[in-house]
Image 1 (spheres, rainbow, N blue to C red):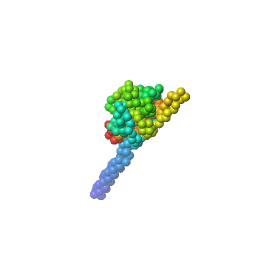
Image 2: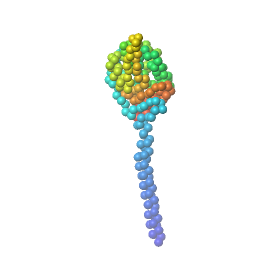
Image 3: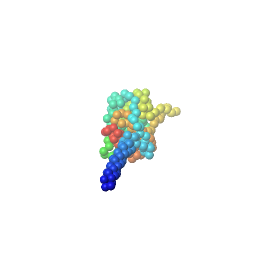
Image 4: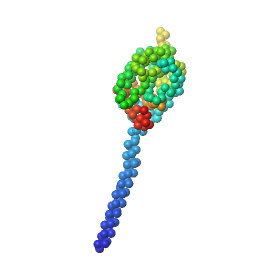
Length: 227
């Protein structure tokens, strides 16, 4: 009788141990299938920034190849967009309101970016190359700081570049012969690979623009180790 009770006790112990092992295995599988993907999702999925009036692309989009002149009169290409972040927008130096307001806003936004996040360059793509000579760009942009640059040159090349940034511009001549330039007002964020990563829509606030840029930068840094 005692021997039968002993065997029964051993079987019960073994059954409990087997059950515990199976439970541990199930917990490990659940963690791998559920918890691990959830933990990695924020780094791989583009951040939702609609509250900051920004849209982020899951994958970078190409910027059109170009050969233009910068504010120093040097011939530049897409290579000027690589190795650093850039905020680009279409405008012109004779713009009476939108462009100077946007540039001033971007200067304040740059000052609001945390110290551990590299500030982006700012690129003005001229929509008025007949009046925007390299020297005029240099004089105009120099007021805002050393990170502000511009490109001018062939009208068709500028249109193609603007188009690849989801932007456009057109010229109108008034009755008095004065040329008016209409252009898009959004900002395009370009990553260090020279790809369009996000679009920010007006109206702009320096704090929100700085926050949007920081969140896109940290997402990209975590995703691909960018700097």
